[in-house]
Image (cartoon, rainbow, N blue to C red; front, top):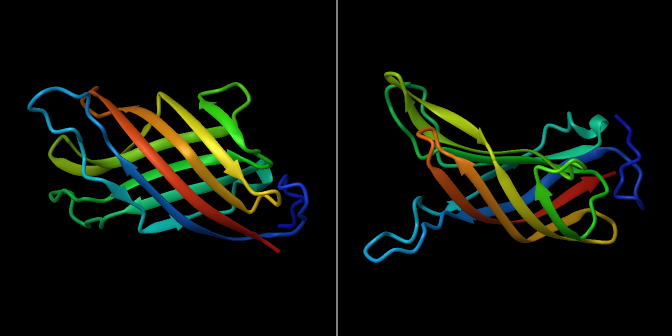
Length: 170
């Protein structure tokens, strides 16, 4: 599909997305409490279906760890995914927002549901993203990405993430 992407200076077809995303999971500081509630996250894969291009968004879908084919086995497999509005500029953005520069922001990890373990994505309840975008819009880097989600048990999970991605339009 041909697009006039809102990376303004370019016109072409979405080809590829490359880069990385990493995150930590800080706990509230308390004496004797581990300062992190999860192991650090380092993306092993970054994907974008391109299906959101016609809707004016670029999908960033990252994952780490390995999944399992058995619902009786838990896993270190996790995901962090979001959509960025085409033409997004350097600046600070919040989620949720009526202008929807960031959309469909979710974090997923394995959790037990009933007798089985499943990858359960949870939509973020809030986030702040400070971005640096290259003039041609093909390099997008976070300066700060603070995310809050509720776990399956209802606990609040804080995520401090950063990403550095390159989008190929030709």
